[in-house]
Image 1 (spheres, rainbow, N blue to C red):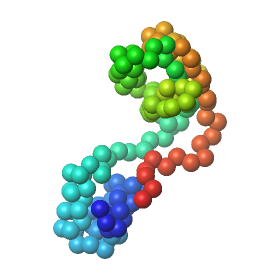
Image 2 (spheres, helix red, strand yellow):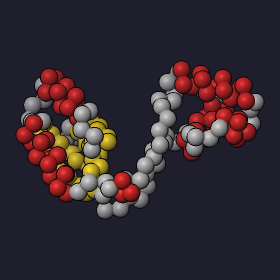
Image 3 (cartoon, rainbow, N blue to C red):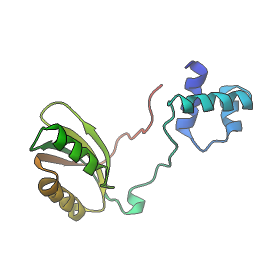
Length: 149
């Protein structure tokens, strides 16, 4: 990957819906060269997909919080089960395995405290969570979904 590829990736992060023609102008390359570079970046796995960023509040998702959890069991089977179950909960938009006092940190986006309470109850009952802390987000200061290049 060279500087031109980085510039191409930056342009896509700013606007993945930009036309190939517009991107080729931004990076100062011909349309075929831009297309070829883009294809190679996709094949090499630098681009994982294309998506739209949605406004949670306009969609009625008025509560964002971060939940930190520790499982009752640390066995491989328990960890695997937890990770598989997390994939099935649409309100959990991110889940990261971490070190320290907790094993996982999750970003939850949901409708209300009532739906959050139901989710937390299911953690304790169904997912063998022994300890959890939940931190509601009051205001988002920065939310940059891309990677700094």
